[in-house]
Length: 254
Length: 360
Image (cartoon, one colour):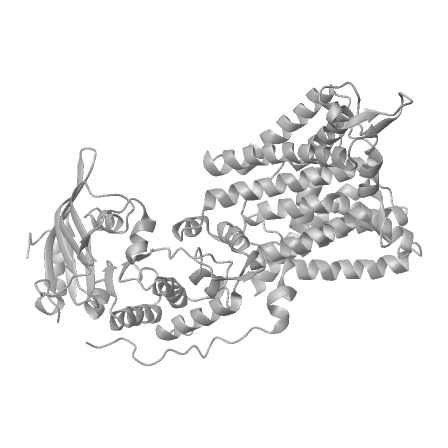
C-alpha cells in the first residue's frame, strides 16, 4: 500500500495551494502528493473546495498561493490545454461526449488522425477505429468504435471518455463523479476501468461522493472541508465512518 | 485488492441492428428519398408530361435555384444554428454583382478605364481582358456575402447573441441595404460581359442546366468536407455537444464563424445565379426564400436541434418541394394550395422522424 509519506517520484505535488475569489477563501494551504499508479479519492461536502482544487490542477485558473510540481518540475498552467500538454486529463462528470458521433470519433475529438491526399488532409477513419478498438480492449470494455455514443450504456460512455485520456498517455487522470447517476452494474465497469488505468501506471484522482466506490478502488483518501485538507490517509488505516465524520466536521482532523 | 470485475466484460444483450434499422435507411433523409421516389411514380401515372425531358430539365433548374443556398444553410443547421438572412443575401449579392458589372463596363466611370475601352466607332464597349469584368463583379457580389457572414458569425460566436435574432436582424439590414444602394429599383447586369453571366447561369451543359452542375459539384465537395475532414467532424461535434467540443480543444468560435461565412457565400452565389437567369436583380428578389431554404433542409433531415444533416438531404428536400410544386401545376390544382401543402410536408417529415425514434 502506498502512503503519502512514501519516498520516490511523485507525479503531482502540491505545496501550500491557496485560492481566493475576492473576499472568499476557497482553498487554503493544501499539500498533496500523488505517485504513479496511485488512486486517490478526493472527498468532501459541497463547497469543501474539491472542484476548485481540481480546476487549479486542470489549468482552468491559477492558484493564488502555492506551487504545483508535475513530474518534479514546477508548472504554471494558463489554460486547460497547457495542463493537457504535460499529461493531465480530466474526465468530466457529464463526460463531454458528442452523442451524434461514433465512439471512435469521440475518442479522437479535437485530435483527429489524418492522412495526406495531395494538398488535402483527410480523416484517417481506419486508423482511428483501429486505435480506438485497441484502447477499448486495454480497458476491457466491449465498445464498438463505429457505434454512435447515443446508443451506448453509461459504462460504455465512461469507457469512451476514459479511452480519450489514454490516447495522450496521460500521467494523471482526474475523474469528476464518474459513478454518479449510473446503474450498479455500470459502476462496477467504471471501477474496473480505474483499475486498468492503475495497472498501466497512471495516477488517478477520483472525486466522488460515493463512499463504497472510494473504498473499493482507492489506495488513499483525502478529505477536504472548508477549503482545507483535513485528512490524507491510506484506505487501510481508516473507515467509512471516520471519513464520514471528517466530511461532516464531527471530527476536525485525522 | 479485490477488483469488482476482473473477468472480461461481455454484452450479450447488445446485438447489431438490422440493416434497415440503422444507417441511411433509418434516417429521415432515407425515407424522404423513398417518399420522393413514390411521388415520381405517382406523378408519372397522373400526368404524361411529368417525365418528359423538358419538364425534368425544368424541375432540375428550378430546384437548383434554391439548392445551393440550402447546402449552405445545412452547415449552419448541423451546428444547431439558423440563418434567416439567406434570402436577403441572395438579393444583395446579385444586386452588387450587376451594379459593379454595369459600373466597370461604362467608359468614363471612375476605375472603369482599367476594364474597358471604346471601339473606334465610339459606341461599342470592348473589354480590355475577356472574363475580367465578370470575375471582378462576381467576386464583389461574393465579397459582400462574405462580410455579412463574418458579421453574423462574429455576433453569434464571439458576442454570444442568439442565431435567430442575429440573422433576423441581418435579414432586415441586408434587405434594407439593397434598397438603399439601388434606390429601390434593383439593378440589372449590362456591358460586354453580361452575356457571359447569362450563359454561365442559365446555359445548358451536357444537356443539363448549368446551375444543376454547380449544385452537384458543390454537394460532392460538401459531402467530402463533412465526413472526411477535421473541420466537418468539428461541425458535427459543435452541433452534438458544444460544451464537449470546447472541452476537447475544438476551436468552437472559429468553426461557427466559418459556417456562417460558408452559408452566406452559398446564398450569395445562389443569388448571382438566379439574377443571371432572371436577367436582373430586382430589389424584392428572393424575398422569403429563407423559408423555402430552411424548409428544404429540414425536410431532408437536417435537425434544427443540431448534430444531423447533409448535402443529400438538402438536395432531396429541394427536389421534393419542387416536384410537388411542379406536380400541382401539371395536375391543374389551384396553385394557391402549394404553400399549404409545403407546410404540411414539413410537419409530416419531422413527425415521421419523431415517431420512428420513439418506436426504436
